[in-house]
Image (cartoon, rainbow, N blue to C red; front, side, top):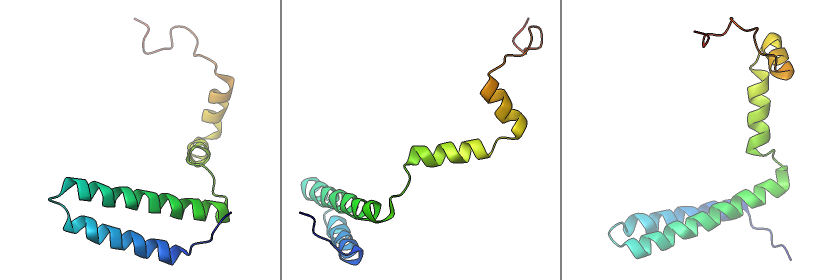
Length: 93
């Protein structure tokens, strides 16, 4: 059973927990409890958004960005994995 919770309601609860955490800075046990509550609320918020948006994973986004920044020549070198002929390497002594 899934219960829809509005994003606004979750954000208000996060702000409330954050305010309470700021008031408990000198009480580590209470502070950790509020931070833990914030963590759970953030996960709830992200899960709620993920089911709506079907956002790509971080890995997919990073792969797309890293491959798009290479030139065609660099892409061909990466794909073919050819090594330079011996003697052309900066590590040849």
